[in-house]
Amino acid sequence: MKNLKILMTAFIVGLGLLSFTTTDHDKNKSQKENIAVKGYEVGDEAADFKLKNIDGKMVSLSDFKSAKGFIVVFTCNHCPYAKKYEDRIIELDKKYKSQGYPVIAINPNDPNVQPEDGYQQMIERAKQKGFTFPYLVDEGQKIYPQYGATKTPHVFVLKRRMERIL
Image 1: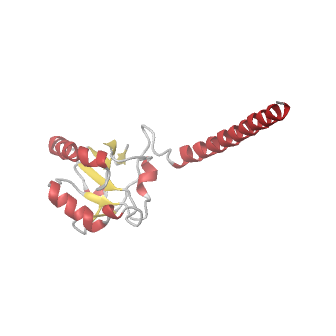
Image 2: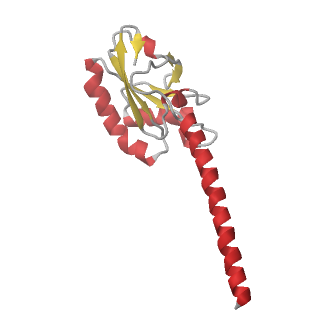
């Protein structure tokens, strides 16, 4: 009985130490993740970018001289949620492009990690779905962290004020 009490006490103390270590580790990880995905806040100026479209041409926000703003959508080929939203994204572009807010879709994924999100697969998916907007590849995954995109689809509405894009 005495050995059982000692064993139980040691188990509880060990479990307690383990939970402190786990909690502290998760806390540090969470802080790092928050810093990494902070991205733009409302009112921040969005930096222009130049990314390759599925037609092989380079596209930037500055190419759309008459746009009042943009609907920037981080999406991809493989994610079931992104696939379910494709028709909605097409409808957004159809509805708001004529009002000066075109959709700009960006695939943020690394095809080495997710082969379904490769450039050729993007071309095929856009053709299959009849995308009416640019579908850009974020080679090197440099743009999505600037925005703070953490999932697909992840949508950002930008407004042009003078020469600034907010």
